[in-house]
Length: 320
Ligand SMILES: Cc1cc2nc3c(=O)[nH]c(=O)nc-3n(C[C@H](O)[C@H](O)[C@H](O)COP(=O)(O)O)c2cc1C
Image (tube, rainbow, N blue to C red; front, side):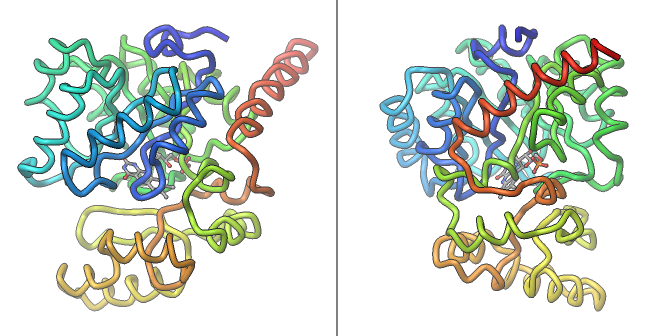
């Protein structure tokens, strides 16, 4: 299966593992790349530029295939010094692909181009996708309302965002949000995307560093078991529906301050929960496609089943 994205990224399959803070480290990213997709490690998981450089080198030891780094930024703030250093690390280490999210990577684009690094900017709305193309991104990922993490503030679904974005842009589009199997891949391609990005499905894999309690919870969860929090601070996030998320919603209802919210939503609380297995204590990103995940599998099995299932679907469609 060849698309402009498989050509651009130099990968066998049009499947990308989106950056996931605390979870997408070298082991997971390399497993995805080795299985024919594009694995992505997250910069924010690393405390410093030096740590990120070490993680990039560790990924290179585990795979000789292309992989990416994700740099997530806050929507309404100038990039911090640490963020700038992450960009330096990606450029100095000549990482093949960079996935950015949260805010425009505009100021860094000339340097990325000069270094020959492919830029995928991930956005939750068509207007941001158009802006990314104008600024020179090589591809855009559009994520819909169903997605784990940040679906934006407009509440528009993948089913609507993907075709609209694909018809507005000349550069290739990657679809994300709600995709967990071969049906999702073929649907996304039918909508005009040239690859998919998956986060939630890869959390429940043997190579993911999430605690087994989290993986087990996903396998037993229904599609109704996520919730949107952080709307009050205009940074909506889809997370597992647990005690922490319900508490945050209560706090938002009474207009709690950001400092108060941070006692629960801070990334450090999430990191602890993912490692110690106390998954009720933190807000943990997950998408509605948890309802489609019935088993913890190896990354290789997930990807191979998607590709072989895709073939079967195409045959079935052709017979209609
Ligand atoms: C546990 C988890 C952590 C995530 N962390 C990040 C992150 O740090 N940066 C980012 O850009 N996206 C993050 N995402 C979003 C994914 O990269 C991807 O865009 C999204 O999961 C796609 O939708 P899906 O969950 O329906 O597959 C995260 C998603 C999950 C499930």
